[in-house]
Length: 150
Image (tube, rainbow, N blue to C red; front, side, top):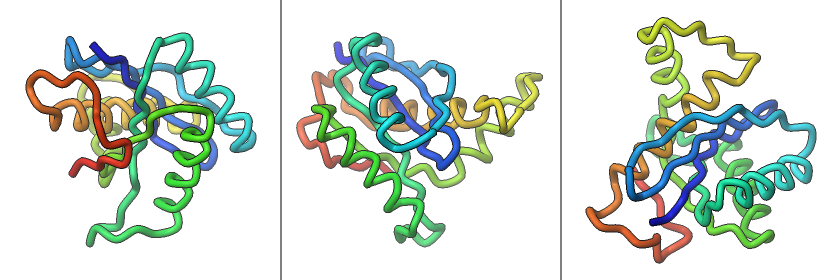
């Protein structure tokens, strides 16, 4: 069983979710406020240790046509910084996850306060769940840290 952390990287907040491959279910955690990339990397490093996780799945914000823009480059730079502290980093297409997360929160009767990070962590849960759903039936660990899912 592997523990995974899903991240919805943003300039002000980073949405967080955790999961394990045994249950195949992702759960939201409180979002991380980003004061600086170094502080965010340190906070994610602490989260890795406290959760016993060995993989980070970062949402990759692609354009509708699948191309990468400035936000995707920032997410990859954050992933590179996490890899430098020893994290295994994977990327997953996150197109429309923030919108879907806000819709899902509303359907659950939860108020989606953007400033509190609820939408960000709900989006991280969707990103991580999408990644889990794309894994083979009996995964042990992703073998390619650059693996991207659709």
